[in-house]
Length: 168
Image 1: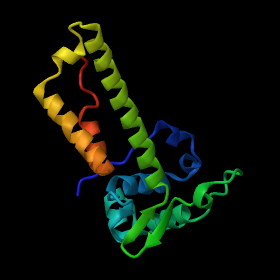
Image 2 (image 1 turned 180 degrees about the vertical axis):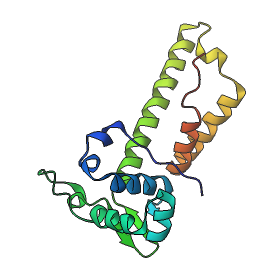
Image 3 (image 1 turned 90 degrees about the vertical axis):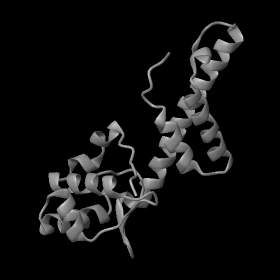
Image 4 (image 1 turned 120 degrees about the vertical axis):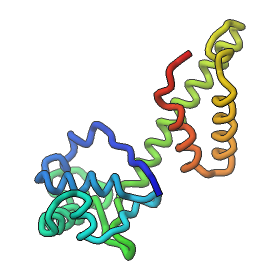
């Protein structure tokens, strides 16, 4: 399964960025390898191969990532732990939070685009609404159907198809 993980720029302001480089690289590798359910299915050996770190460096990183974050004083979800060992591998603890955050960003962009099209149609001008292609309308129908069915993962993937499209 090919998945993606949102990476927000605030990660460089986090206490994670204060950790040794091997910890940061192992965590970023785990973000890249996680499945849609936020589980990294692999052993420490697999993670060491993926991250191009020694098994000892990876084990040290996993230990740090499983431990409470002592660098921040304010309360944190999961006491600042970033991962947890599960039967199938490693769970990214805040993965669901960031997926929902990205889902909200995608929906906001989608709604802004739809509002822009609505205003262009209302104006009666030759705006973006007149230039929307059949492929775009088909994507819109797929998004609405997935959203109504509650399949937010599919809706997010459809919405992401339009990110970066040039404005007409």
